[in-house]
Length: 61
Image 1 (cartoon, rainbow, N blue to C red):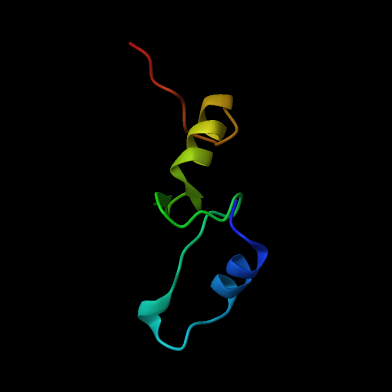
Image 2 (cartoon, helix red, strand yellow):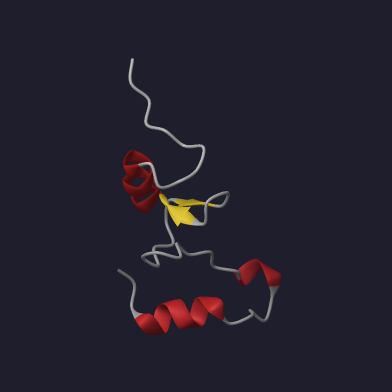
């Protein structure tokens, strides 16, 4: 879980467009971010396996 100050800094508009830091809206993690879902890979896997993300299902074969 990222600190509240780090999350707040990421929400502010940056001085330059290349400084945008995209963070997971659930935990604040910046690495392993999936843009389509606004989640990091860990939260995506948790919510996906629970069936809480529409259109996503854990595969098994």
